[in-house]
Image (tube, rainbow, N blue to C red; front, side):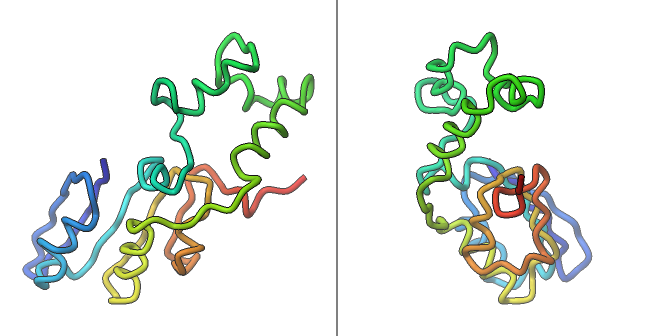
Length: 153
């Protein structure tokens, strides 16, 4: 699900929960009702690019971590475990981001909102930076969990 925060021309503020930004764009934005848009997104917008979410049974990242024999999947992201066994994180990072993913339609619709002057800000939990690959201005993007493009050792 995606949450969109809008301020209409008449000053009315709305929150719309939707399964797709394309539907919201067609119904509310194209007709000129909304003049300012804030977008909040998570893993759902990158799943169609081939990047797994975390929790979906069988296909999510946590399911794939079963091969690592961890007591709980989040352990692989802790500094303590990384210091003990860094190769596990490096292997996972290579599997996830060793190939090039392409932005989805949703990423490009967020860019369209920017190009039309409607986007106030886009907040994401994703670390894949596909919003930037779609051409979003970095000044309009808040990556709540950081990103692989900004990570360094």
